[in-house]
Amino acid sequence: MADPEPGEGGAEARALGGAWAVVAAGLREPDGELASSLGDGEFREGAEGLFAALEGGGARDLRGPWRRLAAAHAGRSAADLVEERVRVFGHAVRGPCPPYELEYGPEHFLGKSHRMGDAAAFLRAFGVEVAGTARERPDHVAVEAEFLSLLCLKRALAEGRGEGERASVCRDAERLFLEEHLGRFLPALSRRVAEREPGGALDAALSLGVALAERHGASVGARIGPPDLDLRPLGTVEEETVVSCSSCSVPGAGSGGGEGAEV
Image (cartoon, rainbow, N blue to C red; front, side, top):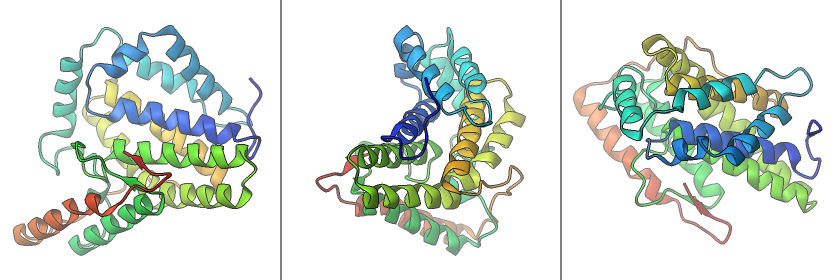
């Protein structure tokens, strides 16, 4: 497969969208679907092609992290993967390795509400509504990876149709969302998980995510956050409770339009 170029009928954007979908699947709560997919030869071949297509031009190796993700799931049940998830993330929002964007950075607790509102604005702008059955906040790493996948696929569709202005809007949104949200805390989360349970399925999925974020960032001009980003300072119990409760109401603010999608 030839190395895709930006705007080449949406080839690069399609590859990025598919690659982020794989990362999101590896970070979602295990339900057996990913394990089943990883055992499917056609799926594995397709994923291998996606990551190979994005490696051109001196880009960072992506097939290596992808193969580690596939190997980390080999022969493991969904129950086993859930146990790993609990060991790594814990049961509370502020566990040993928080998978939530809002737990990272130097902002005071009030900045948490602002950042959640900004993330929600991205979803609303692209007609996305968090499904009522969703079991995670919109700032969960898997939800953000899935949304970035959607942005890429929207750009691919626009480029394929020759809709340059719409494609440019999507590309700008990818850059901003990657730099200000997912890419900002992904390396720090990956470092924490690698220190807590190296070689596990989550470590593999996050390593792949960081490599992909660097590749994607180089393409759209987004800066990726540092691996040593600290967790944000905690407020009082009352402050944290108020902000957390108000943040949880944000997902329902989005409304799906004609081109909307549920995450």
